[in-house]
Length: 289
Image 1 (cartoon, rainbow, N blue to C red):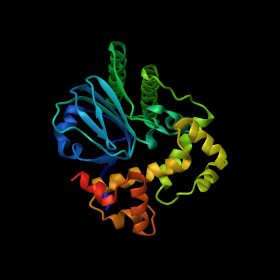
Image 2 (image 1 turned 30 degrees about the vertical axis):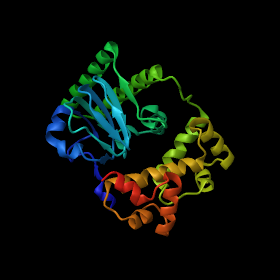
Image 3 (image 1 turned 120 degrees about the vertical axis):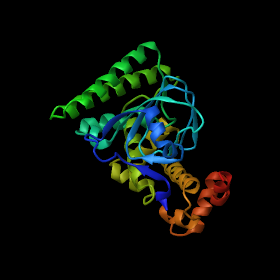
Image 4 (image 1 turned 45 degrees about the horizontal axis):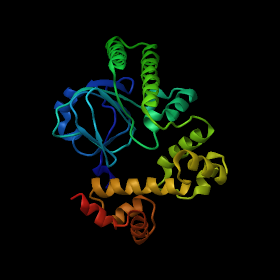
């Protein structure tokens, strides 16, 4: 069953669905949980202050440098290194915490730190940025220690937004290719947002376009410009990613995975997977045993 990929929410008692925890302490308390594949229903900014671990996010091994930030989107399947000493901070927050208005939601959806459609965002901090982030994290931790009132969530949200904006600028400065924000990017992000929620039920480009209120031609132009992929290719990529997750990180049978992903016949899923991966689902699963 899908539940084989352990999924975590905020623990009971966290007031704002917003928290900063010490990475060394988290490692000590939850080593067994962190070092196996898992998902979270919240976003994470992981500040690796010490150590050079290899962090896995959706089959992508990321070589972490000391004093760097990693931005992990919600529901990504990740796994911490079980051999490398690490220390740092983890800032966690949910949609419920950040998205209080339509403007907030639009900001987060267009933030490339969690919506980089090509790679997982990872920033190595220089001396100036280190000072800024040390100050920002300390302000957050100080505020979290004060008695909660009607202003606290807004104050924390403002601190978080500053961190995201500063990180976005740093990310833009180190990238050789930049995604220009505008109607095309906004269209692609909206498409991906709907796709993430409905890929297991909906596989028709025309039906996605209808939901988004655009023509198929408009959607196709946007995805080709931003992603160099057609909407159909993006749908296929999302289905294949989830299929890989379920094959490697669960004990579900191929038949169960086929039904989970919306295939009426398991044989259709096997043909579909082999077409895109050149191996059968079982052959792919066996690679990771």
